[in-house]
Image (cartoon, rainbow, N blue to C red; front, side):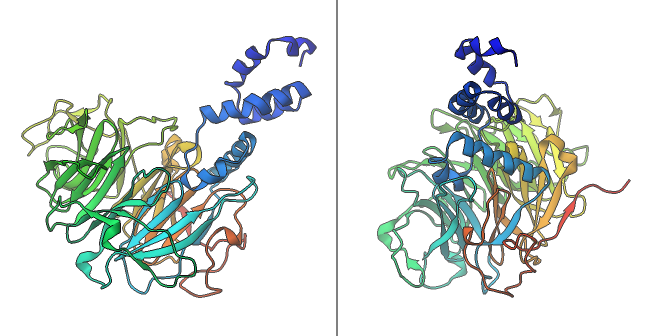
Length: 481
């Protein structure tokens, strides 16, 4: 480097740092003490601001890690995603019955709801990026003292509560919807904690129809019953709900500041309703179709919906909608797209936004099974994960090269669907009928990072080469030519 380079004002070099990669910053910091100090002070912070990687389970650790440690962790994680390389671990022993679990997450905890119980896993804090932050079982709660199928939990959603991270909305098979504040776990207590009525506030919005899905955004919530009644309301105790009637078997919701997205079983299974000044439109602003609509469309169903992370370089926008369909396809729609269907036979009315075709479609060509849930995040915030209906398979795609997707069987490799998935920067949390599990792509995973497991058996295969995770079957999506 020219000797007079350091004579340039620091403001100019700080502006230059905005355009440098991790490799560039690392190389430049080794050229002189001046640049080493400048990059430690500004370079890594600048890079983090431009390349945010949202991750709930690392929130406590990120608050104490230096910018350099955060960049180091994210860089190693991205390399593992590219290989792909990960540690597969169950989070619990096998349940005694076949259940249909659902997940929800916040900055302090992962919640797993199955039957009439809610299992809480707390996120630990690591002082440095060389050791992965822990995920440990905290305690279990029960919503009903007697096991009844009509009281099974169908949906849960975390909502803000001032940093306590213990407040959930819980939907049940009998149509009940409750705001639940989980009490603190009692040290040394055995068995699940029963949630007394003092911790529960019922919202009578759905009659006797199962509450299939709950979504939240800020202080707003959206719940959906199996019969197609959607309720839009706030977290306030005196909230007056607004209702939408889909008049179809319904499954999934996704809520943003500007849109409510609803998934059902019909000729038009995916619809978008606009939100303006806390009011939701009763008629859809967009119909989102699949790519197979022609003169003879067939009814389909959408089981899972999500958006993109704020940092997603391929479109971190509320106008991007990711959905999992009955025919095994994951579709990505962009509400700004000009690819619109002129007409869908059998559909008499169209919204002003028209019927949109997807801008991207992906599938596992070896497993044409329904997609039960979808989530986005992963390395570079560019990945989509889909929980499928058979063989405990989770499919992954990097949207920068969607034709090079891959799938993996969850630990235990049973015949179950993957009912629920949550994807963040370095971890994929999922749940089958047998137990919750995690795929950890981050560095520094140790045996004590996750809950202790039986020494052998429990339906698990042998340990992998790391000695920490378990062997799982992975395969690519490419078909031979």
